[in-house]
Amino acid sequence: LPASLGGLFFLKKLVARSNRLATLPSLAGARALEHLDVSSNASLRTLPNDLVVVKTLRELIADGCVCLSSLPEALGEAQDDLKTVRARRCRLTRCPEGVSFAISLETLDLGSNSIAFLPDALGGAQQPSLRVVRVDDNLLRRLPRGLKCAAALEIFDCSSNALRDVAPLVGCGSLVDLNVADNAIAEMPRDLAGGPERARAAHEAKRLGLERARRVMTLFSRAAAESAQDAGGGGGRGGKENNSR
Image 1 (spheres, rainbow, N blue to C red):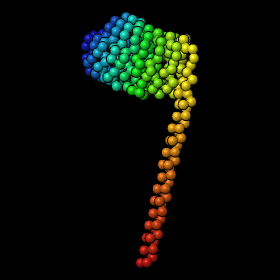
Image 2 (cartoon, rainbow, N blue to C red):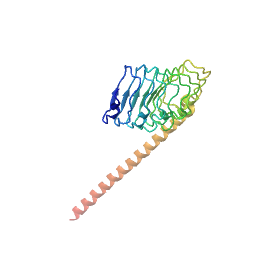
Image 3 (cartoon, rainbow, N blue to C red):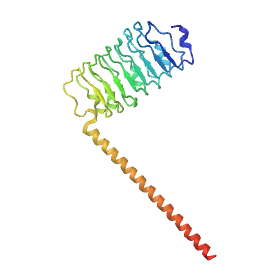
Image 4 (cartoon, rainbow, N blue to C red):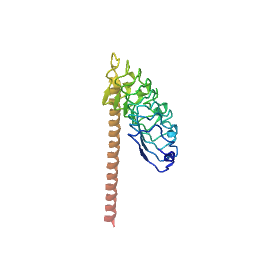
Protein backbone atom coordinates (compact mmCIF):
# COMPACT_ATOMS: atom_id res chain seq x y z
CA LEU A 1 0.00 0.00 0.00
CA PRO A 2 1.30 3.52 -0.74
CA ALA A 3 2.81 5.46 2.13
CA SER A 4 0.47 8.36 1.33
CA LEU A 5 -2.50 6.22 2.42
CA GLY A 6 -1.88 7.08 6.05
CA GLY A 7 -2.20 10.76 5.22
CA LEU A 8 -5.82 10.54 4.09
CA PHE A 9 -7.21 12.81 6.76
CA PHE A 10 -10.87 11.98 6.09
CA LEU A 11 -10.48 8.21 5.64
CA LYS A 12 -12.96 6.44 7.94
CA LYS A 13 -12.86 2.84 6.73
CA LEU A 14 -9.96 0.81 5.36
CA VAL A 15 -10.62 -2.77 4.22
CA ALA A 16 -7.54 -4.57 2.88
CA ARG A 17 -8.38 -8.18 3.69
CA SER A 18 -7.41 -11.22 1.60
CA ASN A 19 -4.28 -9.76 0.04
CA ARG A 20 -0.54 -10.43 0.22
CA LEU A 21 0.44 -7.49 2.36
CA ALA A 22 3.66 -7.88 4.36
CA THR A 23 3.52 -4.44 5.99
CA LEU A 24 1.21 -1.49 6.38
CA PRO A 25 2.21 2.15 5.97
CA SER A 26 2.07 4.60 8.85
CA LEU A 27 -1.53 5.44 9.75
CA ALA A 28 -0.73 8.31 12.07
CA GLY A 29 -2.23 10.84 9.69
CA ALA A 30 -5.51 8.96 9.24
CA ARG A 31 -7.09 10.89 12.08
CA ALA A 32 -10.70 9.94 11.17
CA LEU A 33 -10.10 6.18 10.75
CA GLU A 34 -12.76 4.14 12.56
CA HIS A 35 -12.63 0.68 10.94
CA LEU A 36 -9.49 -1.23 9.92
CA ASP A 37 -9.75 -4.72 8.43
CA VAL A 38 -6.52 -6.44 7.39
CA SER A 39 -7.71 -10.01 7.91
CA SER A 40 -6.43 -12.93 5.83
CA ASN A 41 -3.13 -11.36 4.86
CA ALA A 42 -0.91 -14.41 5.31
CA SER A 43 2.36 -12.46 5.00
CA LEU A 44 1.51 -9.63 7.39
CA ARG A 45 3.90 -9.75 10.37
CA THR A 46 3.23 -6.51 12.27
CA LEU A 47 0.90 -3.56 12.47
CA PRO A 48 2.29 -0.02 12.56
CA ASN A 49 2.90 1.10 16.14
CA ASP A 50 1.53 4.54 15.37
CA LEU A 51 -1.91 2.96 14.99
CA VAL A 52 -2.28 3.74 18.70
CA VAL A 53 -2.43 7.49 18.01
CA VAL A 54 -5.55 7.08 15.85
CA LYS A 55 -8.01 8.18 18.54
CA THR A 56 -11.09 7.52 16.42
CA LEU A 57 -10.43 3.80 15.87
CA ARG A 58 -13.47 1.69 16.75
CA GLU A 59 -12.78 -1.69 15.13
CA LEU A 60 -9.58 -3.61 14.41
CA ILE A 61 -9.95 -6.91 12.56
CA ALA A 62 -6.87 -9.02 11.80
CA ASP A 63 -8.24 -12.57 11.73
CA GLY A 64 -6.26 -15.12 9.76
CA CYS A 65 -2.99 -13.18 9.57
CA VAL A 66 -1.00 -16.34 10.26
CA CYS A 67 2.37 -14.55 10.46
CA LEU A 68 1.19 -11.70 12.68
CA SER A 69 3.19 -12.12 15.89
CA SER A 70 2.17 -9.00 17.82
CA LEU A 71 -0.22 -6.11 18.15
CA PRO A 72 0.89 -2.62 19.22
CA GLU A 73 1.46 -2.81 22.98
CA ALA A 74 -0.39 0.44 23.69
CA LEU A 75 -3.39 -0.47 21.52
CA GLY A 76 -6.54 0.81 23.22
CA GLU A 77 -4.77 2.62 26.04
CA ALA A 78 -5.67 6.09 24.76
CA GLN A 79 -8.35 5.09 22.24
CA ASP A 80 -11.58 5.72 24.07
CA ASP A 81 -13.79 4.70 21.12
CA LEU A 82 -12.24 1.27 20.53
CA LYS A 83 -15.00 -1.33 20.77
CA THR A 84 -13.76 -4.39 18.87
CA VAL A 85 -10.39 -6.14 18.65
CA ARG A 86 -10.26 -9.36 16.65
CA ALA A 87 -7.11 -11.30 15.79
CA ARG A 88 -8.00 -14.99 15.57
CA ARG A 89 -5.72 -17.57 13.97
CA CYS A 90 -2.56 -15.49 14.12
CA ARG A 91 0.81 -16.08 15.84
CA LEU A 92 0.28 -13.81 18.83
CA THR A 93 2.17 -14.73 21.98
CA ARG A 94 0.71 -11.98 24.14
CA CYS A 95 -2.29 -9.70 24.48
CA PRO A 96 -1.33 -6.01 24.44
CA GLU A 97 -1.45 -4.42 27.89
CA GLY A 98 -3.23 -1.39 26.45
CA VAL A 99 -6.29 -3.47 25.53
CA SER A 100 -7.14 -3.80 29.21
CA PHE A 101 -7.50 0.00 29.40
CA ALA A 102 -9.76 0.39 26.36
CA ILE A 103 -12.69 1.86 28.27
CA SER A 104 -15.31 1.26 25.53
CA LEU A 105 -14.20 -2.27 24.61
CA GLU A 106 -17.11 -4.61 23.94
CA THR A 107 -15.57 -7.53 22.03
CA LEU A 108 -12.12 -9.13 22.33
CA ASP A 109 -11.42 -12.18 20.17
CA LEU A 110 -7.89 -13.58 20.30
CA GLY A 111 -8.73 -17.24 19.81
CA SER A 112 -6.35 -19.72 18.17
CA ASN A 113 -3.05 -18.06 19.04
CA SER A 114 -0.18 -18.90 21.43
CA ILE A 115 -1.02 -16.50 24.25
CA ALA A 116 0.10 -17.65 27.70
CA PHE A 117 -1.10 -14.68 29.78
CA LEU A 118 -3.78 -12.01 29.60
CA PRO A 119 -3.36 -8.56 31.21
CA ASP A 120 -4.46 -8.86 34.83
CA ALA A 121 -6.61 -5.72 34.55
CA LEU A 122 -8.65 -7.06 31.63
CA GLY A 123 -12.38 -6.83 32.35
CA GLY A 124 -11.93 -4.58 35.36
CA ALA A 125 -14.17 -1.72 36.43
CA GLN A 126 -12.57 0.49 33.75
CA GLN A 127 -14.28 -1.67 31.08
CA PRO A 128 -17.99 -1.64 31.98
CA SER A 129 -19.16 -2.54 28.44
CA LEU A 130 -17.08 -5.70 27.87
CA ARG A 131 -19.58 -8.32 26.67
CA VAL A 132 -17.65 -10.87 24.58
CA VAL A 133 -14.25 -12.45 25.25
CA ARG A 134 -12.96 -15.34 23.16
CA VAL A 135 -9.52 -16.66 24.05
CA ASP A 136 -10.02 -20.30 23.11
CA ASP A 137 -7.19 -22.48 21.77
CA ASN A 138 -4.30 -20.69 23.46
CA LEU A 139 -1.78 -21.52 26.23
CA LEU A 140 -3.50 -19.82 29.17
CA ARG A 141 -2.78 -21.16 32.66
CA ARG A 142 -4.83 -18.61 34.56
CA LEU A 143 -7.50 -15.98 33.98
CA PRO A 144 -7.02 -12.28 34.75
CA ARG A 145 -8.30 -11.10 38.12
CA GLY A 146 -10.02 -8.14 36.46
CA LEU A 147 -12.75 -10.48 35.23
CA LYS A 148 -14.16 -10.47 38.78
CA CYS A 149 -15.55 -7.03 37.90
CA ALA A 150 -16.80 -7.91 34.40
CA ALA A 151 -20.47 -7.54 35.29
CA ALA A 152 -21.58 -7.06 31.67
CA LEU A 153 -19.75 -10.12 30.29
CA GLU A 154 -22.19 -12.36 28.41
CA ILE A 155 -20.01 -14.65 26.27
CA PHE A 156 -16.73 -16.13 27.47
CA ASP A 157 -14.84 -18.87 25.63
CA CYS A 158 -11.60 -20.12 27.19
CA SER A 159 -11.79 -23.67 25.85
CA SER A 160 -8.67 -25.59 24.82
CA ASN A 161 -6.19 -23.98 27.19
CA ALA A 162 -4.30 -25.20 30.28
CA LEU A 163 -6.50 -23.65 32.95
CA ARG A 164 -6.86 -25.31 36.34
CA ASP A 165 -9.63 -23.05 37.62
CA VAL A 166 -11.93 -20.25 36.51
CA ALA A 167 -12.27 -18.51 39.88
CA PRO A 168 -12.23 -14.93 38.48
CA LEU A 169 -15.56 -15.60 36.75
CA VAL A 170 -17.43 -15.55 40.07
CA GLY A 171 -18.36 -11.91 39.49
CA CYS A 172 -19.69 -12.37 35.95
CA GLY A 173 -23.39 -12.43 36.72
CA SER A 174 -24.50 -11.69 33.14
CA LEU A 175 -22.98 -14.79 31.51
CA VAL A 176 -25.25 -16.60 29.05
CA ASP A 177 -22.60 -18.54 27.09
CA LEU A 178 -19.60 -20.08 28.89
CA ASN A 179 -17.21 -22.56 27.29
CA VAL A 180 -14.43 -24.03 29.46
CA ALA A 181 -14.02 -27.35 27.61
CA ASP A 182 -10.64 -29.05 27.16
CA ASN A 183 -8.78 -27.59 30.12
CA ALA A 184 -7.43 -29.08 33.36
CA ILE A 185 -10.25 -27.87 35.60
CA ALA A 186 -10.97 -30.28 38.45
CA GLU A 187 -13.97 -28.46 39.92
CA MET A 188 -16.20 -25.54 38.97
CA PRO A 189 -16.50 -22.90 41.70
CA ARG A 190 -19.67 -23.15 43.76
CA ASP A 191 -20.20 -19.39 43.63
CA LEU A 192 -19.74 -19.13 39.85
CA ALA A 193 -21.39 -15.93 38.60
CA GLY A 194 -21.92 -14.83 42.18
CA GLY A 195 -23.82 -17.84 43.49
CA PRO A 196 -26.19 -17.43 46.46
CA GLU A 197 -24.49 -14.25 47.68
CA ARG A 198 -24.98 -12.48 44.37
CA ALA A 199 -28.55 -13.73 44.15
CA ARG A 200 -29.29 -12.33 47.63
CA ALA A 201 -27.67 -9.02 46.67
CA ALA A 202 -29.76 -8.83 43.49
CA HIS A 203 -32.92 -9.65 45.44
CA GLU A 204 -32.12 -6.98 48.02
CA ALA A 205 -31.41 -4.40 45.30
CA LYS A 206 -34.74 -5.22 43.67
CA ARG A 207 -36.57 -4.94 47.02
CA LEU A 208 -35.01 -1.55 47.74
CA GLY A 209 -35.90 -0.39 44.24
CA LEU A 210 -39.52 -1.38 44.73
CA GLU A 211 -39.62 0.39 48.08
CA ARG A 212 -38.29 3.58 46.53
CA ALA A 213 -40.85 3.33 43.74
CA ARG A 214 -43.67 2.91 46.29
CA ARG A 215 -42.48 5.93 48.27
CA VAL A 216 -42.37 8.04 45.13
CA MET A 217 -45.90 6.92 44.18
CA THR A 218 -47.15 7.66 47.70
CA LEU A 219 -45.66 11.14 47.65
CA PHE A 220 -47.11 11.74 44.20
CA SER A 221 -50.58 10.62 45.31
CA ARG A 222 -50.46 12.87 48.38
CA ALA A 223 -49.35 15.84 46.32
CA ALA A 224 -52.16 15.23 43.81
CA ALA A 225 -54.75 14.93 46.60
CA GLU A 226 -53.56 18.13 48.29
CA SER A 227 -53.60 19.95 44.96
CA ALA A 228 -57.17 18.81 44.29
CA GLN A 229 -58.24 19.82 47.83
CA ASP A 230 -56.71 23.27 47.44
CA ALA A 231 -58.45 23.71 44.12
CA GLY A 232 -61.78 22.65 45.62
CA GLY A 233 -61.34 24.92 48.63
CA GLY A 234 -60.51 27.85 46.43
CA GLY A 235 -63.61 27.24 44.33
CA GLY A 236 -65.80 27.15 47.46
CA ARG A 237 -64.43 30.45 48.75
CA GLY A 238 -64.99 31.98 45.36
CA GLY A 239 -68.60 30.80 45.36
CA LYS A 240 -69.26 32.31 48.82
CA GLU A 241 -67.79 35.62 47.75
CA ASN A 242 -70.01 35.69 44.68
CA ASN A 243 -73.09 34.88 46.79
CA SER A 244 -72.30 37.63 49.27
CA ARG A 245 -72.15 40.12 46.41
